[in-house]
Image 1: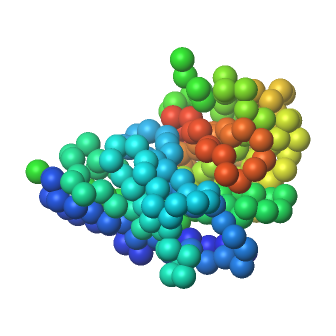
Image 2: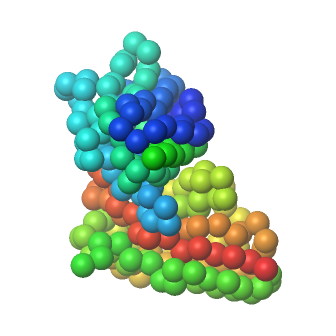
Amino acid sequence: AQSVTQLDSQVPVFEEAPVELRCNYSSSVSVYLFWYVQYPNQGLQLLLKYLSGSTLVKGINGFEAEFNKSQTSFHLRKPSVHISDTAEYFCAVSPNAGNNRKLIWGLGTSLAVNP
Amino acid sequence: DTAVSQTPKYLVTQMGNDKSIKCEQNLGHDTMYWYKQDSKKFLKIMFSYNNKELIINETVPNRFSPKSPDKAHLNLHINSLELGDSAVYFCASTRGLAGDNEQFFGPGTRLTVL
């Protein structure tokens, strides 16, 4: 079985500051890793994903994440945030083998960017 | 062109009523999902269909019944609505069953049970 822990439920930050949203996972098998973003009153959309290869993954809107297998982490970063980045961010994992490949979701991190 | 659409966007109803939410995707995907998001933003998968076949059925009261008339549509019918059913319900779709595929979400249906 897999589980996902997002270590911060809320992250307040000032505009143009860097931000890191932390995600750790637990799994007995190899996994694919995802970050999704949910803007206010909208559905979720994919920010980025790690499937294999380079451990540094770049996504949309200037976000990137680094897969660290030894620490079972997949932290999301952005060097300079904008007001428009205010949203809920979800980390998710999916086993990369087997028939039941549903996404296992973290509880989300609310990013609030202040002027 | 909306990729995944849901109707209605808002649904306000009394306890005990029966209601349906509809979902359609025009992406040609094989797999569709229903999620429930509570007031704390916790996202819980309810059901998943692949080519009209039920493949995921989480621990959901049997008052909830999904129906997939074809692979582009997945509807959710809820009987005898309860206060605890108030939430935002999201439909999503993805290509195939492989876990590496992106899920595309609809805009959500906010259900309020009074």
